[in-house]
Image (tube, rainbow, N blue to C red; front, side, top):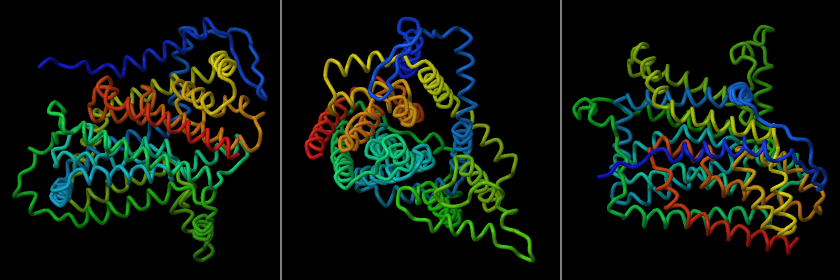
Length: 468
């Protein structure tokens, strides 16, 4: 069998970076202010600018890289535990008669949580568990992708109470989502989930589809696994999962709940013998659910690793070795993230795409189609939602108050849709790399979903525009 070319993703990312650089040489800086497009002087990217901007990625996004390294080590450590192997095997045995139902339930789990949590990257903490179960079930790579990364991408498209999205929409458009927009978002999630599940079901039946293989399976002997108790791992895993989910829901801004922040203040300000003992114990970082940072989560995972190591009598040296092996395994995904942030910083520092946006608007006018398409193009180069909407805010701010609500939803849909196909989609790039799925082959699977959901999303936006 001819070996497939596995470098399509890197090639795609490289092409986007090259375009971002070349645009600065042929196109002047172009920006929107109150809906008016203005051109500035040329500002070209030089050889040493690339090195400077690429290193700035580590400076501005240290928390992302830090968490990725910790997740890498933690995942490798988990896979080294006999209890983890036994636990995932037991779960697989319970669902082996209806594996596709597990795929759908898992996709819903990721989609719903991603739509309400602040950081999609946090959801990658659960991916190793899903992959291990899917390997036990002898499922395809595409099915495994849908059960995990597909759910994350779907939740990004249909963000309902995502703290970051909510805050960005509030700050840029000075609005909050009304019932019609929320209903539309939920409808998109349901339609997208059904369509993705159907496409996955048909794709998984193809004889040439690659299976997810548990590379560690042969390292464990059945008699040894039977002697290990999974109860401590289950309890610690459930507690860690609940803490993580609660910690990354923006309770205050998305739901108007101040209970957790008030409770955290009472705990840290309380004294014993006139001393704020708990403030010393927890440190200066925020401990209230909804206010955790990626650094906080990284610290929690290291702590959980130590606890599991003690419970299962794993030597510190072995834990360190597993973390090092994890770093090696995640080297390519982390390098890809590094390049993606280089593209982001270059594109934001040299905003040359304004002339493209202006041309699209002049040709097609101000409508749901152009708002979505412009956001899609911006998302390919600016990578994260915050840096997509920020530079586009001057384009949208002179639009009527009622229409702004639809525009805000159009930016969310445009950003979420392109995440399914763009090589610069961080969740997609990480998922394809970790699951070893060829990008070109993946596009053959996902293009129907992308085309259908783009049409459906624009139709929803057109209906909401007429309602507004």
